[in-house]
Length: 341
Image (cartoon, rainbow, N blue to C red; front, side):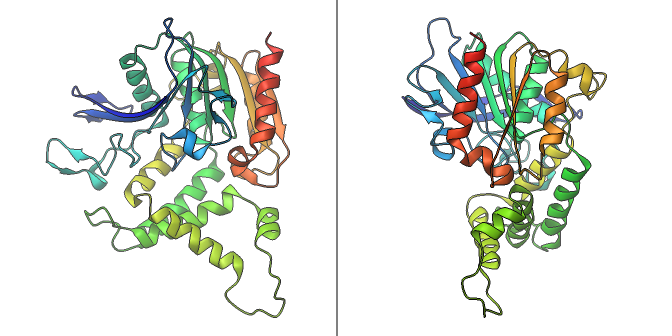
C-alpha cells in the first residue's frame, strides 16, 4: 500500500543557525505496513531535487520483491526541509505574513533536515529503523541522523556522499548560485522567478553529476561535418528546461546552501569524532567515475566509522550512477546484509 500525506506541526521549529520557523509542515510517502513492533522501517532520504515518491524516482529499488521490499518493510520517504515539494520551504506560506517566504526563508542545514525527519518519525510512532539509506545529499541526512540518534538505526547505507562537503563541491554550488542571481527576475517575489538562471544552474550541475566519458559516449555526433547545434548543447538545454518545469529557483538556491554547510563534525569535535559515534552496521558505496564525491573522498569515512564496509561500483555514469546502476547496487546491498548474518 502506497500513501502520500502532509502533516503540519503548529509549534515553532528551531533551526541550527538560531532562526525559528513558526510552524513546520512535512509531506511524505509511505509504502507497505508498519508492523506491531514498529521496527520494520526502511527510511529513504532523497537527493537534491528529488521528492518523497521514492518508488517513482528509484523504480528498480523500491517496490514489492525489490531491494527495499515494500511487502516486507514499511518504507518512508519525506520531502526535505527547504525544498519545494510540500515540506516547509521558500515557496511555503509564512503564517506570520500570509505570503510565501521566497528569499525571506532562513538558511537551513542538513542537520535541520534530520531533525525534521525525527519529528516525523515520532509522529508515525516508529520505535526503531531497520535501515536508513540515502545517496548524495540523502546520504548526508542519513549520516547526520545516525550521529544524532545512534541507538535508533540498525543499518546505514550511504551512497556517493561525504561527511563534510568539499571546497570543490562548494565551488560548483557557488557557480550555480551565480547563474541563479544573474537572472534579474531571481529577486522577484513570484513562483516563476529565476527560471533562466535555474536552467543555467542545472546545466552547470550536470557536469559534476556526469563526466567527460559519459558525455563522449552518449552525446557524440554522427554527422562529422556539423558546425553548430550539437547534441551535447541540446542535451544541456533540455535538462535545464526539464528541471524548470518541476522545481523552483529559490528552493534550488537554499538546497545548494544546505549542501555547502554539511559537516557532521560541526560542534562535535570534528568529523573523526562524529563518525566514531555511529553504532549502525554501515555500508559506504562510491562510484568509480564520480566527480562530485570521488572514491578517494568516500573511502576514508568508512575507515573512520566503526565496523563499516566499503564498496566501489564501476560505472560510466559518474555521480548519477547510484540512480542508474540498480543491479550492481542491489548486489552490493545484498552482499552487505549477508555478511552480517
